[in-house]
Amino acid sequence: MRSEMLTSILNDLNGTSADIEASAVISTDGLMMAALLPGTVDEDRVGAMSAAMLSLGDRTAQELARGSLEQVLIKGESGFVIMTHAGPNAVLTVLAKPKAKLGLIFLDVKRAAEALTKILL
Image 1 (cartoon, rainbow, N blue to C red):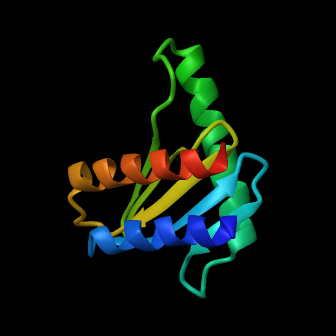
Image 2 (image 1 turned 90 degrees about the vertical axis):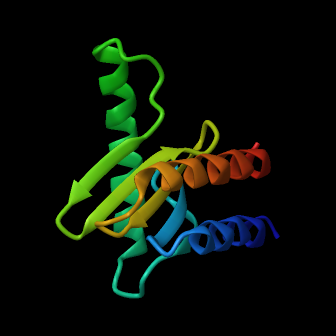
Image 3 (image 1 turned 45 degrees about the vertical axis):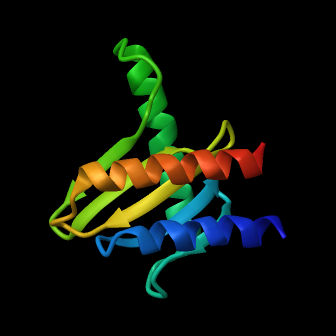
């Protein structure tokens, strides 16, 4: 039931913008909790990389006195990867198109992370 609730939030998130291509909720240990990813993507690999990147982002923000980490943003030629905490033990990872309106996506991602946090606590 909980995984259905997580998937429902991901469905809502992916439906908020045509610029959002995929999303996933991953434990901080790198285990996939729920995902709406393309079939060509290895869920285990995404899980491991997302957990590692968010952990590095946390440590970097602390070491460089930037305060609490809000998100990790990766920009590539083919689009964006946005990662943010979804509670203390999970990561929300979102894939967005290269021409995405990031301000709107950041807002949608924040709302989705808050909804996920309520379920996961």
